[in-house]
Amino acid sequence: MADLWDFNKVNYVGNGNLGTGDGFHYYNPDEIIGGKKMRDWLRFSVAYWHTFDQRLVDPFGDGTAIRPYDKYTDPMDQALAKVDYAFEFYDKLGVDYLAFHDRDLAPEGDTLRETNKNLDKVVDKIVEYQKTSGMKVLWNTANMFTNPRFVSGAATSPYADIFAYSAAQLKHSLEIGKRVGAENYVFWGGREGYESLWNTDMKREQEHAAKIFHLAKDYATEIGFDAQMLLEPKPKEPTTHQYDFDAATTIAFMKEYDLDKDFKLNLEGNHANLAGHTYQHEIRVAREAGLLGSLDANQGDKLIGWDIDEFPSDLYEAVAAMYEVVEDGGIGPHGGLNFDSKPRRSSFEANDLLYAHMVGMDTFAAGLRIATKMKEDHVLENLVTERYSSYDSGIGADIESGKADFKTLEEYSMDKTQADLRNATHSDHLEQVKDTINHYIIDALSK
Ligand code: XLS
Ligand code: NI
Ligand code: NI
Image (cartoon, rainbow, N blue to C red; front, side, top):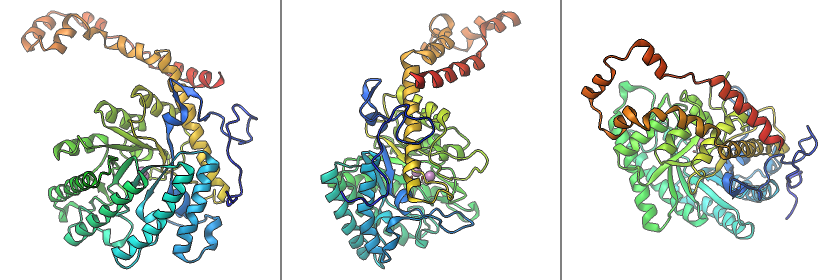
């Protein structure tokens, strides 16, 4: 393979030399952790849009990124060249999956017919590379939010022509998903929400959203594209209010419109924070509903708040997320960790793309090691079992089995004294629990 990028293949160096950034310290792809190879637990994926297209703009400044394919000035030449860069990048980083939007890959033409032609050329090249590299597609999706035609939404646009166009775009995107063998297909409702309720028919818009999901699933079935369909919640940005607000809201929507058999969730760290939740909360809600599909790995910033798509480096948060994953036995049968993340605007060199993925991969690999050790030692499991043990017998068992009603519960409680009830509760010793977690973080990594 030609050397397009100015860096070497990343290897696992273990503890290596402290502070040199010389390789993976925690991610050892073929090492077995908790009964599975690390690469199979984590299924890391590189996001085409951030890694190869992102110019590192912010609302106040132009892009700062310096990329080796900037030398290709014709948009189609650049799009085709990027595929070479992308596949060498995957190889050097040692990932097995990629993810993309249709519009990440090729420039739009004036009509959908022209756009599809551009796109198919690039997809042909991707399919060729897949044969020689074994790279798999974690998921693909359709970008139905960037072009001005989507100003008021795609499926939820008040304009029927835009719904029709979105369906046509989606149709081709599903066909591409089938060609590249995508394991999942994602819908993120970029502008499926509203700016103002004064001019919005919310019910009608939500019905239209449900309709396009059903049409998509039906068409996927028709063409034999058996990817897991995923909805990706986000509460706001770009619209003031997005319909797929968070995991719980999206699950309610899925149940309301009979989508919960065919769709699961793709959850993102920064989106969780925007909704006022932790990443762990969102994953817990999904997994308890049996709807954990896949994860977009990134982190927000406590001070800025916005969706800044920072590469994950927060070890504590990664431990919490991976704890939920380990409890669920994996990220769904088809899910993975897709880095929906970009380097900071001040990390503008090409090699920063590599460092950024390295910290993200090592953070989640470390999270996996720690969470697995906690699970193997049953630390939190014992604590939780003990905390709810009053429901295992006596009155608690009667409540759970339905044997108890208001009358029996009144009879049981009527003469309990203040002291009796105080004695029924126990301190959580939460600080001690957190100390135990810290101990695991330090200890599990040093062994
Ligand atoms: C944006 C979303 C987006 C989806 C894919 O905030 O995270 O990147 O993951 O359209
Ligand atoms: Ni996002
Ligand atoms: Ni995302």
